[in-house]
Amino acid sequence: MGNHLTGYRCVVCGSERSASGIALTCEACGGNLDALYDYEVISREWSREQLAADPDPSLWRYLPLLPVDSVPDRKSIRVGGTPLESLGIIAEKMGLGSLWVKDDSRNPSTSLKDRASEVGIRHAIEADKRTIVVASTGNAAASLSALSAWHGVNAIVVAPAAAPPAKLTQIVQYVATLCPVAGSYDDAFDLSLKLAENRGWYLRSTGVNPVMTEGKKTVAFEIAEQLGWKMPDAILVPVGDGCIIGGVHKGFRDLKAIGWIDRIPRIIAVQAEGSSAIADAVARGGEILPVKANTIADSISVDLPRDGVKAVRAVTDTGGAAIKVSDDEILVAQHDLASSTGLFAEPAASAAWAGFHKAVENKIVRGGENVVVLITGSGLKDIPAAQKKVSIPAPIKATEEGLNEYLSSLD
Ligand SMILES: *Cc1c(COP(=O)(O)O)cnc(C)c1O
Ligand SMILES: [Zn+2]
Image (cartoon, rainbow, N blue to C red):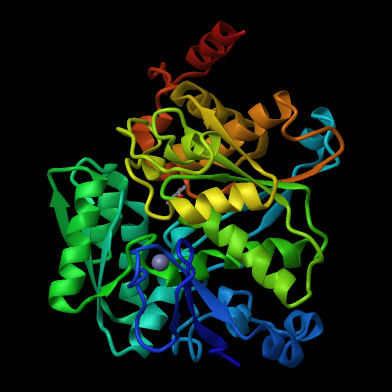
């Protein structure tokens, strides 16, 4: 059922290359690559009915549209198959038709990054690579580490030493080789490229490896399937490097190419004000320039987006928009989402919820529309950030009287 991959095409200059071996960036111009498939064969050999009958809830149910030969031997640690929760009461209050959150914190390492790691590890194993290196602000590394432990490959992680302790702790718990560098994510990224090239390791860093987009696109497959192939009007996606949003776009484009959906929703990018290279690029007509990133939302804190072209294209090709939110708006949104839905999201993911509210206010999302907000990671990933807007009360006397006094002091 697998490997209908026919090659890769550069998103900048259009050069193509074959499907064989490991492709990173374009040999002619250095641009990012799009994976190409034989959509005709896929649509002939695969149907929505066949998919519906597949009992596997993981992302491997979409094997015909993934760039690998076959599914892993040990796939029972489930990646994908995350819930799409309907928020009817909030939709009604906000004058929307429907509102859903796709809760991708419900993956093994509690972020959407598991989708790319799972497919990437399989891709590496099929290419006989057993050591995988990644540069990461934290989640991609935690994810690669977790799934490497599961699949029995080696993970080498280059991460800023200043990454949130919970993420670094995940990495060492999963026994990956952690190289914490006294530098930025961008420094870590450049180092990962050198390690991969000089040592022949598989590179899981975002953007440069087109297979990452292919893993992340499965979130769009799931949303489409969960909505019975009826597309929403808009989807809000938090954006740092731009790989997730490019993946969401690619997923919908794949489904349209095989005729399973008839249109692609407007894709709305949400960025932190302090890390807005993509939003700025959309505003200036496409040119991507680096910024000096500074935001509490570490997972979307990026100087130079590594998948910027795909991200800008996702917005402009779908008639979407790019929205900036402040750190304060992100933290307010984090608490609002948690207290109104029971979903505890990390700051980067909460940015999407903040952007959603801004989009409704600014009529980027209009009354009566059907909207999906993508929640990309768990709030437990960064407790210090989550404690900025809420505080744990001081201890009280452990008596009923003490409690009564305390509770009446709250009124
Ligand atoms: C990586 C990440 C993002 C941003 O994804 P990009 O592909 O870098 O744009 C958003 N939220 C979370 C939780 C992430 O881990
Ligand atoms: Zn090129």
